[in-house]
Figure 1: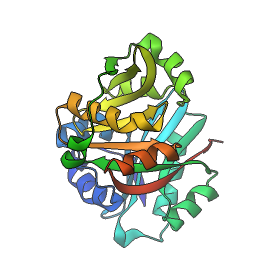
Figure 2: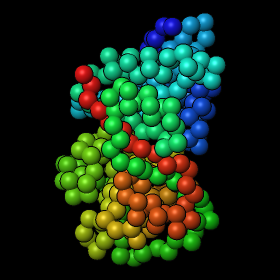
Figure 3: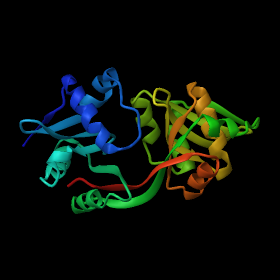
Length: 256
């Protein structure tokens, strides 16, 4: 098995293996793959592709976004080899990832490599019928966040330091939700997906209206979003008609 950096011509391999994530996310277009994913992707192969990992490092922290093994290559140590290759290449002191709660094999692998569960999250999709039923609220407004506000907003909302800035690096739009002029939430909007991550509100009743406003801002009739470590917000989104895509654990660890 050989592990190498991804190339632009790995797009077809990426598309084939991306399906194994079973995330429900739309497949990124070729241009987005070349610009955003390939620079942080490594491929394991022998005569054929065995799997890939996609990771991003920012401010000394590495986020392993994808770790995929081809169906025919499982139980051969491909996932572990890719994970260790990420560790060698990350140039970070810490790393993190998300894993579906029912993926026992992946959980065991990550724990054996030093990851620990930090919190649980729920990934949702809001479609047009549910969005249409969410009432607009005149006391809520959206505004763009400036870089100088990132740290204070993250502290106020309990978001991980640097998360909003990372979204800006990835060419997403950081947005604040205000209720009568006071900070009530924040998100980073990816209008192309469309998706909102992170997504944080100060009260559960603000979750559905904020999600609708973000979908409207993206000009789309659906929205992917994740409630991180906020079970009451997850419950509010489900009550508003959001479809639960999967539950997951957020795990992190030190890179030794």
